[in-house]
Every structure is written in structure tokens, then in C-alpha cells.
Amino acid sequence: MGAAIELEGVTKRYREHLAVDSFDVEVPEGSVFGFIGPNGSGKTTTLRMILRIIEQDAGVIRVFGRAHSPSAVDGIGYLPEERGMYRKMTVLRQLMYFARLKGMNSREAKKAALDWLDRFGLEDWKDKKLETLSKGMSQKIQFIATVVSRPRLLILDEPFSGLDPVNRETIRDSLTEMKRNGTTLLFSTHDMPTAEGLCDHICMIYRGQKVLDGSLREIQRQYGQDTVRLGFADNTEVGEDRLAGLGELRSRGRFQEGRLRGDPHEVLRELAALGPLDHFEVVHPSLQDIFVRIAQPSPEEMKAEIEGEEPSHA
Image (cartoon, rainbow, N blue to C red; front, side):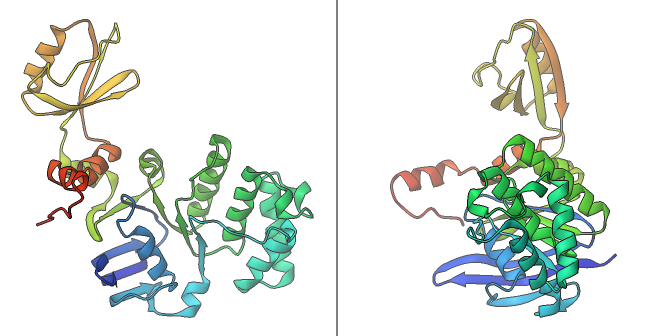
């Protein structure tokens, strides 16, 4: 398969702010592609350029091999982070409307809408106005409206935001099934465990530039096995001042995780002397850890922010 999306040297500036800077990325067709980065990093701007909601200032964007093609955009389903639907319209009529906007005839649109409503257990609500539905039901209707036209490419901006665990799992299952049926999925998220569990490929944008691009295994391999996961039988927690060879300690429930800075055998010996150690392993850092390492402000930046100055990124 080829690429569903290709960006080459894409740049977007808002007056003095460089939102996206010479950005290159390729989304393989049929993949689940996670687009991560802190707030303000350029994720949503990039998604909107792919969708032609806004135009890039420089560079080339191709969707299914075509640049600036309305027919390619017609094959995209888009779920924005800021959700919005017609609250006075009935559920079935609304879903049919969105399906017809993407080229389905009335018969196809009705069948597809009813199939999705049945899958989500919402068939009894098809003739109700959206304003009468609960928040959870409304979120599921918004998702159905995005996928009812069977898009080749599905772009979702923070799709799991605000969902309860049951609805989150329902949508995860639907995305997995769509991927099996050949749909390319591109979604932005702050939820690193979800990105780890769903994505074939992960790209991180930070300050408008690409800083990670690859499979989770490839990305973890770049950072090496430098994370220690440890636990004590009596739930003792180690402070960072106790061990010179272990820093950046964080609680992970039953375990603590820290970054290895010395000989792991020496760290193990020192930990064993502190109490009844019952878990110790050296592992690859999680995507969450890698995200924090890249996006966490430096001491200089934190000081500049407190003092109201513009930090230097040189």
C-alpha cells in the first residue's frame, strides 16, 4: 500500500507565531497513526491543513496521492475536538444528512445510519431530537455521524476526550474494526496509554516541528532501556535523594519508575538494602515517559515563564 497522507515541508505562520515549521510526515494507508504533542504544538493546525479548512503557507500536502483535491477530501471523515451538531434535528435525519453530504444516496444513507445505531444500541432513539439525549449518547451520535459514510480516511482530534470508560471502549472497538476493514485512522491524543495500545505508528510534534516519528518499538529503541520499575513488599517509596544512580522517580500505583543514571547492579544492591524489594526490572521507557522528557519545560523556561519573559530556544 501507498501513503494515505503525505506532508512535505509544510509551514504555517500566524503573524509572528510559527505554528508549523517545515513539517514532513507520511501516514501509511491502512494504518492507525497517532499524532501526539502538548497543547499549542501545532497538531490541530496540521489536521486542519490536511482537511483544507486552512491553507498552508508553504509545502505540499497530498491525500491519497493528490494535492488539493476535493474528491480526496470527500473520502475523509473528521471528528473535531470541539463537537457540534444540529440539536433540534432528529438523530436518524441528522445521520442521513451527514452521509448524503459525502455522496451517499438516501437509501444507502438510511441503511448505514440504522446499522450504526443498532451497533451502539441507539436504534430506539432514532426519531428523538439530539437535545433530548444524554451527553454520552450525543458523543456516540457525533462519532457515528463521522463514520456513517464509510470514509477511506478517518481523522479524529482528541476522540476520547470526555468519554466515560464504557463509551471509550465502544469507540475503541469500532476503530479497531474499521482498521481491519481497510480504513486509515489518524488521531491526535494526549492519552499516551491509548496511543500505545492502538497505534501502528506514532508522530510527535513539538513547537511546530517533528521530534518523533516511527513505531512504538522504534521510538523506544532510540531511548534505550533506561527506565527502572521497582516495588517493595511493604509499599516503601524511595525518594530521589536516596540513590545517586536513579532519578526522575514517579509513582505508578504499586510500582515506582525512575530513570537509570548509573550501574543497574549497584542500584539494585542499594535498593535491596532499603527494605524487602519484591520487584525490579530495567525496561524501555513508556510513551508517556518519552512525551514528558521532550515536552517538560527546562529550568530556564520555567524561570522565564514565572518572570514573564520569553524563554530562549536556541
